[in-house]
Amino acid sequence: MRYPVSSLSLGELERQYVLEALDSGWISSLGSFITRFESDFAGFCDVRHAVAVSNGTTALFLSLKALGIGRGDEVIVPALTFAAVPAAVVEAGAEPVVVDVDPENWCLDPGLVEKATTPRTKAILVVHSYGHPADMDPILSFARERGLAVVEDCAEAHGARYKGRVVGSMGELGAFSLYGNKIITTGEGGFVVGNDDGLISRARFLKDHAMDPERRYYHTEVGYNFRLTNLQAAVGLAQLSRIRELIAAREALLETYRKELGHLGRVRLNPRMPWAEPVNWMVCALLESADESGREKVMKGLREKGIDTRPFFVTIPEMPPYRSCRVVGRSGPRAEVAERLSRIGLNLPCYVGMLDSDVEFIARSFEEELVRAGIL
Ligand SMILES: *Cc1c(COP(=O)(O)O)cnc(C)c1O
Image (cartoon, rainbow, N blue to C red; front, side, top):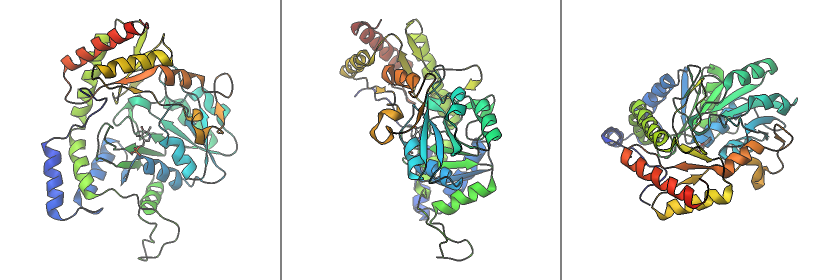
């Protein structure tokens, strides 16, 4: 494929740091890169603590465990997101309750949260989807009123802001992924972030085998190994030092897409609410006058021109493990908004290193395929 949907940006600094870690002999999960990566990432998220972990899914799972969520509890999740979100809830022993998304910003619809809440609800797991922050204020105030925890899934939105506040700093805990297609990467990796000393030390304790800090090799409960290595942290520290530049480059590419595709009335690109400073994790295009088969035709046509695309996520309740989850939508037990987005949304190539001329070529090809599929 000439144009993949996403690709890495690894520079000279990543190479230098990795070699430094290697030469130091500290390649396992202790070392100075881990310490620096954690403290710099906490600074980036404007929180007191960041705990480096093995991936974004373990970050979500650990966040729920640190909050004491388990059997008999319910956790509210959005209908349109990656399956790791409900999977982490199930793995913690709790039940996901699926709430439809807002048609404007594609994140959890705050207007449905009250309807989804029962006496068993313990937390709201908000996802800042495709780089756009969720509408946090109504969610936070409802959660405070009812004594619910808020966990922010920031896997797709490193550095995005809501009314000036950076994602990950608003809920009780924030979970990040550092997978290869995220804003910054360590190959595999993640973070749990937060301000609460107690929750953060629970997360640290559980991620490292739950060993009693006062007595070595004495374990007071079942623990896990969700550690990140110092080698991965070396890559991560270099990526983090370039993150502003990476975010700006992605934003510039999105602007070029907007310029090239803005005249197509029935194609809507990434949302941007007045209160949001999103980051461009993926360039999103909604084919508003199409259906799923139209979208498939466009994706196939682009593939034949060497341009890779990816469809939006399949909604959570449409997948076998989650079919029996309770669903709360605007007009009944269906996530209708999420279903529609899921069928007509696709992601276009976007990665640091792409040129404006690449975007122009992709945009022209996209327009041609939309015409060919009878969508424009
Ligand atoms: C990528 C992603 C995850 C999972 O992260 P991994 O590092 O792949 O485990 C979780 N939630 C969302 C919203 C994601 O996009």
